[in-house]
Picture 1 (cartoon, one colour):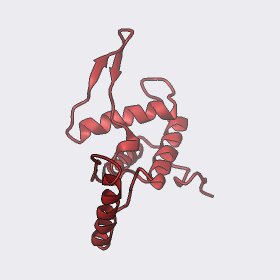
Picture 2 (cartoon, one colour):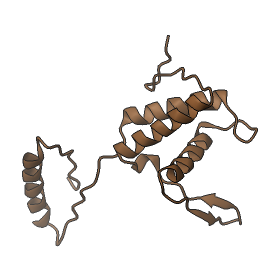
Picture 3 (cartoon, helix red, strand yellow):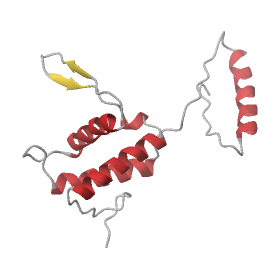
Picture 4 (cartoon, one colour):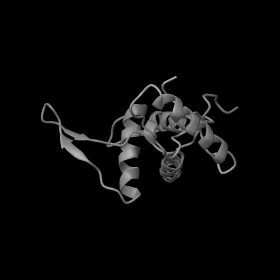
Length: 143
């Protein structure tokens, strides 16, 4: 096993750190050094499903600048807008063919908290723009 990954909570931190200590010792027996990364937990599968269900409903019901957009295009619009709405700066660059591109953040790498904020942002926009959500976020349609 080359990778050790555990989710740490206030209740299990001592046990997880003990396991990590043991694993580091095993890896150092075979390697000169190892890397330890501690970071906030990234988005959940349920959050991802909910976001995509919401974007799917928006794509079916709304246009942007007079045209229909795909789910992925709507995702780009919302991630970019969310970044500005949360006080950050958009990163723009000139692409390989001279086009302007938005170097947006990845939703797959967002923390649980950051993606929850994005979902709230999408939900608020949808409420202001008359979107009716028909999906629960788990791939199932409401009945």
